[in-house]
Image 1 (spheres, rainbow, N blue to C red):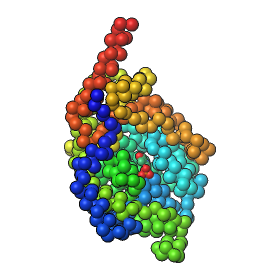
Image 2 (image 1 turned 30 degrees about the vertical axis):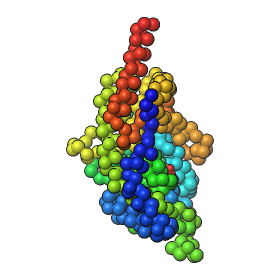
Image 3 (image 1 turned 135 degrees about the horizontal axis):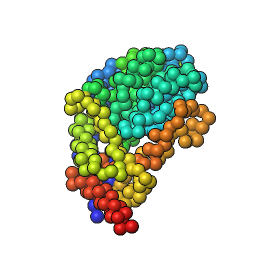
Length: 396
Ligand SMILES: *Cc1c(COP(=O)(O)O)cnc(C)c1O
């Protein structure tokens, strides 16, 4: 039986082998492992790609978030960290690192609910919280472009301007995605990217990038990533060792040539899934913001995630596994249910949509090099699963 994995990094490596091998070989020859030329070359190329003034390579997506927040605390408060009275509004339906970064910056995460059809933070809920008597000293908003689709950035930026808040975009899943023609990560005060191997632009280890049009934020991030000083032997701030490795930068430089092609491939796979699955009543597909032109609102499908009602999620996952199709649950637990946030978070009203989603979502294989027939096989299996269920119901 053919196996269909969520992602096939070996296949991707084979596809780009010559570029990647050459890039690694150049590093072996120059031996500049720490902040070598490839790091700055990658920063420049990504800055140009995103149309932002500054990009700064860092050691992971998590560090991109933490360093951005620390830079924002330094810039807006003149303090090393935020404090517990500083609140940052974010989504509970994301990877742990989003909320964790807020805690590590000293601030209090405030979770507001998501839109149940797009899975992204709901701007109406953000506004509701800001107007409610329980809101405290809100410093900023941290929207996550979940699964590769942009949040409603017009609304979020409008709210931020009205309340004088910063916006830090979590772009870990959305390299190359767009909101109204503009690249994600370029719309807020800063954007945090991840090059974790499974991301839609991934390296061969950990890596990340901060993008910002603000020179102060950029220079604080640059200082923080190497121990907190302009001079490493005379330090001004509580810093980190959080540099992007030269070798990771070199690999990503080789891979970035393919990013538009790969995002396009992801979109084509998504289209096959959507066309194949849209008439199945028992499942909901992620709704996509309508745009006026073709690639105005550009979803890059880091994940293709469906939603199943009536407790069928685990059953379908098992059925697909028995038929050699891998799937994953992103995410099985909303952040506000995790021990790490217990007693140190705030919750606006209820987080019912996020909670329901954790019980109902299933991500399907979306390997950019996946063959059309493999995507069609997955569709066929899912259809068959529901037909068998229906027949069973009729017989019963
Ligand atoms: C992966 C991810 C991160 C963290 O990135 P790392 O490079 O793994 O540290 C943060 N936020 C989201 C939404 C992610 O998916």
